[in-house]
View 1 (cartoon, rainbow over the protein chains, first blue to last red):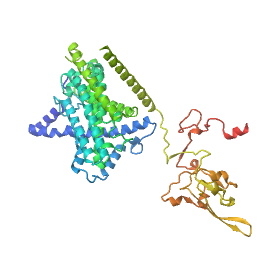
View 2 (cartoon, rainbow over the protein chains, first blue to last red):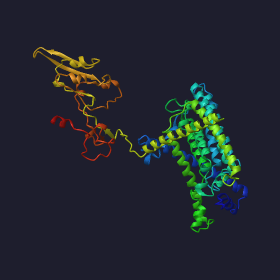
View 3 (cartoon, each protein chain N blue to C red):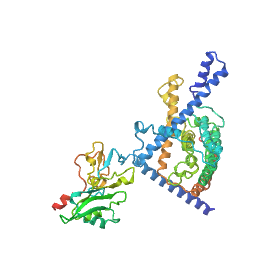
View 4 (tube, helix red, strand yellow):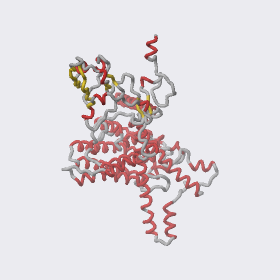
Length: 372
Length: 191
């Protein structure tokens, strides 16, 4: 495995050569990838909003946004600007502090989770040894924000919506964590980098989907439920309820919920790509292609291409999953709350437990194929 | 034990079956994506109203004999016929005639029963106003003819579903001179 390009090391070395102390050089470096990721996530949301509207339109034989910019690509920007300029309403007799804190608590953990999403060998903000666990922990904060905003609105429908959203998030967290655990069992590490590297040896054949088909399905279903995407979007249920816990929200506070839900969708897709679809790895391993063409894999231009290809592959896989989620939205009917909880506790939980036990057994039986 | 295993097997079978149904549904939605949108982009494209379209009512003042049949057949006695008896000619002389389209249900009874055919339906349907009283059309307003969709240079006229060639459900980009399905009324008359 070649080390890939080390942007951080090169950047810090350049600053130190200019005469800065090592600590200052590192402090200058640190905000750069963070800003880059936040900007990337925001742009990703704009793209997803546009895609959602265009694909929804295509599925229903409509045209969708087309006047704001070419093919309507500026429509999400226009929507966002509208939300920014709307009046910020806090209902009378609501709890203004909790009301404001709710959307913030929903959005911040989602953005924080991008800390552990790898786009390449060294293209990750931090390579935490508890990476994927950090994401699971952060995603459990969101239901508190939902409950908070539902309760603070001083509106019985908001409260019910908040309770439902929290119940949904909590009950789908368990099967999700169990299916992640099965992957972790195979790669012997919680770090997202190690999880991808474990899948990198034989190209598309070594991706975790083939070894964890059940886990992949469970994780994807649970991810859709966590994001409140359509088969499981009953807390807000566009066509049936007013908006669930978002009923009293307007302007930028509503905008935060909106951004949060889409960032969460992109994040879940990215993590499915990382956990099951080989992250930044190409279907045919790039070392293999390089070896076939007789190229030295440490040559700088090949490494730049490798890094660019890695980012493209990660994003491509994630957006394929986003497309699947949008298509599922217009295919599946909404489940009832009892069906939702039944599916979570009576189907996904036992199946994911079986999956975990099966993985452990297979790991003992065939250590070469299941990460001994 | 065997009973339990059978239950598990049945449950798994049901889960696989429902997964297959989801797959079928996905293929349907995926197939829809390559179909052309049927959207009529309203202010720029308009459907051509059919020949029996019941739009705003047209009224010819000079033909009217003030018989008030239209008022009698109207479900809510809507037309207002203001006439006086002209002693010199011994005939009714019509002063004013008006219909309030904010109340009219466009049933067409008045048009059907008018003995002198001075009432007729037009293809006008864009009747929005800022004040409902502006919908109370007097005899002058009733005598105006609507602007045809076909003549408007700003508008692309599109044919309705019943006027498209056989097997085509999409009015955009029709070849010139394409006929509707079936015989035209005049051809039926010739038979």
